[in-house]
Image (cartoon, rainbow, N blue to C red; front, top):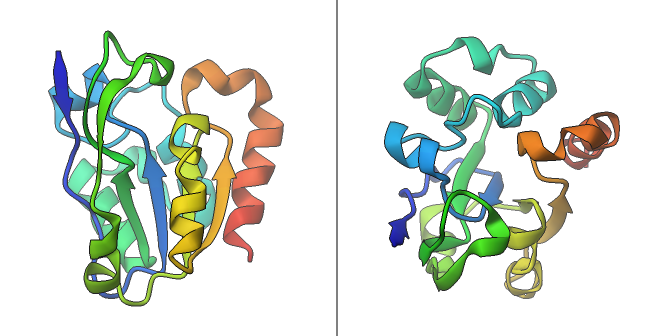
Length: 158
């Protein structure tokens, strides 16, 4: 089954963009980036910016990210996938990254949430952005929690 990604959450003030791969089933049902309660994305990012993103409504989370000049998007605008595992994504359609220069003219840093999205790191680096592939925020990746937390924090300290 073909799954559709979400629109970019960016504006002209965005300086840091976090790229995931493609929303999972729970996120699609909720119409929210990182909607699965087992995903640590909102906790990780909340710790970094000093805000309780986990305790906010989804709309307030997005507004808080924008206020902190952080954007969200996915590498794929669509793709086929059974379940929510990145390794199972096939038939993917890549988002139109050339639009970033217009949508987010102040963008400097692109962070990739996990290995699958990180496969496209050379593409964004070639466009002139500073890039970094981070360990996935997925709950399945929690056994590396301490390392993951420090890598995410370091990426934002540039």
